[in-house]
Image: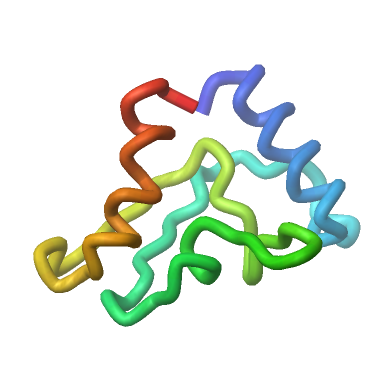
Length: 85
């Protein structure tokens, strides 16, 4: 990871309360959700939007068996992929 990505990922982990005296996040987070994951489980959401589990900021999202994911879940990923956000 580039230095600015390390700083940004560390800030996100720290804000989520997951850093716990570990220092900087230097390795890209790797996420490989099961194809039965819900929209909220993959993207986050709810009345007070939250992301369960560990943040994947500047990480790798591996979608094994891509055609098995529900269309709605894949559509939720379209906008961030198209805008780079």
